[in-house]
Image 1 (tube, protein in one colour):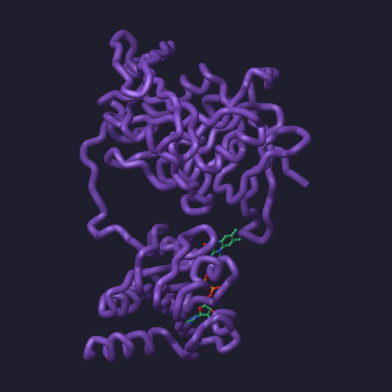
Image 2 (cartoon, rainbow, N blue to C red):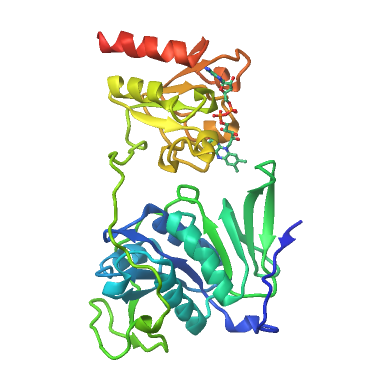
Length: 364
Ligand code: FAD
């Protein structure tokens, strides 16, 4: 049975019939659309088709409107673009201000966000401002055939059960979804959609390349209470991880023991010219960044060689790596499930075995 969540609302009763359409709050970094936004638009398309409604995406930033075409290709019918130099980089107050104004104006029925660092920050702010509920970290979304309500499924109680959550008396119904969970549709660059440039700062008019339609919203960005100033954006020193295209992946699980324990995994990956993967357990522990996670809620990989070190082989991990050409597993527990799917298994302590492999391969 679905669990109901309700926001503590001072609005009184909402008129739910006023709300229509499925929205995606798209994210970009340095004017490049994040994959999760394409995934969410693809998912929104499926939900909207069930409701016989439209999909809209929202793009916020500076010089971001070129990404609108991409969003339309993945299934958006409308794209709202809010551009302003004040919005160049994500800031909680300014983004929450302009997006909540936009939502209050257009009244979408469903709003989806990526469970990225920014989405996790923005989602709760928006739901508080809009006096509605938010279901975080959904892994599955669907529409209830009878009620037309959004069924938001996510792991609960430490992943021991899947809870389906509904938001019955408030709108919009809001969910965050982890990157890599929803399937990305094939983009169709012949799809037609319209782009609406929303003025965050009223007064000036701008031309949209696709279709011109200026909507005035009683919002004034520069009037918003913005307490944060960005002084500098510091990029992570490491090159970004490209697990999906890697030929060789050396992955570490809880058996690695600590964040420092990953050094042996990194050394072997380097000698083999591969990438470092990880199980969700170590990502949740904060030992390694989420972009390394392989599995159902991480990345799907298919390298020529996958070396699983200290990984038990839970079904959710296997879902992301089982189709690798060759799997080598290193585990102290000879009963570990990973040994059921590997080509070669080594029973032993990874801290002894992995350095031996590194030494061996570096002499090749
Ligand atoms: P554990 O299960 O704790 O296993 C650690 C292993 O290390 C054990 O087998 C142990 O014998 C071995 N070991 C210990 N010490 C050593 C040593 N010194 N040398 C060698 N071996 C050693 N998991 C994912 O990985 N990816 C996902 O995308 C994912 N998505 C999920 C989605 C949902 C909805 C849910 C509910 C769960 C998901 N999980 C995912 C979690 C998954 O169920 C497991 O909890 C997780 O994969 C376990 O990680 P692990 O194998 O590193 O840890």
